[in-house]
Amino acid sequence: MRPHSAPRSSLAGGVLALLAACPATEPRAQDFAPGEKLALFHCGRCHVINERNRMGGIGSTPAFKTMRGHPEFEAKMRSFYALRPHPAFTQIPGVTEPFTPELPSPIHPVELTEEELDRIVDYALTLEAADLGGQLRSR
Image: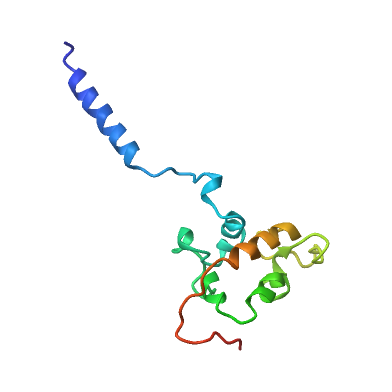
């Protein structure tokens, strides 16, 4: 028996045990609801979408479940690109005006197709509204 074989096997066993305990780093496509991955990728930069990015988003930006309680939620989601601050950084070919060199997007643009927007809205409509203790109102 070689003098170093026992520590190697212990180390290998420990590494295998750690790998088995670690969750997969990349969820499989079937682990996402239709539209969820798009919402996480595009909207999750600023908004909390669901439990997958619950510690993400920007603090002053409402979560999808918070917005879901608004009586005009679907209409607002379908036209979000026209609601502040979204026009400054959102591009939907054939719907929004392209950015000009004089007024470019201040951040990396959100670029969606109309079909992708529909998939995001359809996903958002499946979310249960957060219980805020009363009806959400616009200012």
